[in-house]
Image (cartoon, rainbow over all chains, first blue to last red; front, side, top):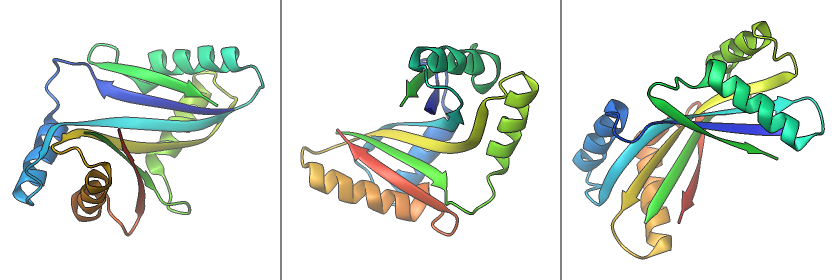
Length: 79
Length: 79
């Protein structure tokens, strides 16, 4: 099964990369851009045909490795 | 308008981060994971109500700043 895990900094955590990107966009003339945030996306194939099991396994991966729960939140999609 | 830009390494470009993540997942016991790839996701708000214009502007942002066209490809979603 195809798994996508999106990892973003939690609201309230300063997104330095997002701020830098926003400043760079403005300096290039894209002045209408705001609220720029930069996250990670991890895609992978997972053996098995059970969607619920894949989702649970992906959640475990995110908790243990893919995201830092202190400052990041994640969202999982299984297809 | 809400804009999402997903940036991934092009197929054929060695994804070092993906390989490292895959090895780490395997060592944690997630042996069913394969084809792990790591990308970036940039979300932002864009002034204006014209979806086509927002998409064109986002494409320009990606070409000029958000993605490295030599090794990366991107996908844009406007909502």
